[in-house]
Amino acid sequence: AQTVTQSQPEMSVQEAETVTLSCTYDTSESDYYLFWYKQPPSRQMILVIRQEAYKQQNATENRFSVNFQKAAKSFSLKISDSQLGDAAMYFCAYRPRAAGNKLTFGGGTRVLVKP
Amino acid sequence: GAVVSQHPSRVICKSGTSVKIECRSLDFQATTMFWYRQFPKQSLMLMATSNEGSKATYEQGVEKDKFLINHASLTLSTLTVTSAHPEDSSFYICSATGLGISYEQYFGPGTRLTVT
Image (cartoon, rainbow over all chains, first blue to last red):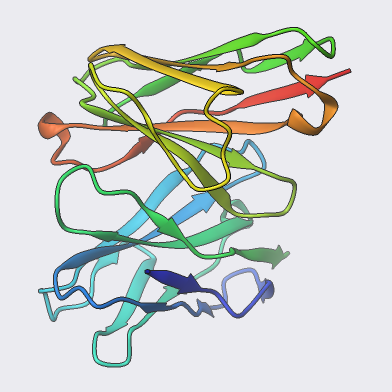
């Protein structure tokens, strides 16, 4: 069974600074997707960034970037130039490539942004 | 991006009654919909997966007779909590996926259920 582990329950960052959230996963599959979702106080899940396992290049979306280490099964998220609006719960998630497959979520990391 | 709606956003019901939550894909055909439950300060727990026109597949430990799921059309799935009890109070979230959106999952805004 696939598992996703986020070892940091909470991280604090100063506005405009950088914070890195860790995520490790366990799978026997070779082709899959990894995601980072943001859940602000509104509770709406928002996709932050997506990585395809067969792509070696790390995904980036504006101030968000990932460090994908397939052999180590590690998928960290870096938030650069942190903004107050980045304060939220962040969930790492895994999904096998085949259509209709379910997401497996990590336990989440709460990000606090200090002004 | 694809839009998924949920209705109602909040519902309060008395113990012993049933409540229905709707999940709609507004601009794509959702061949598969997922229902999650989220307790305070916890992650999302998958309850069931429903494919259009088929019976839902429930995760281990989820009572299929208590949480009835119907996915009768490509744009609508419903979750009915039957004979609700206070311990069923939670935040319920649906997500939807389909060919037209490359099988990415898009999430609804969630429904807060309070059983008194």
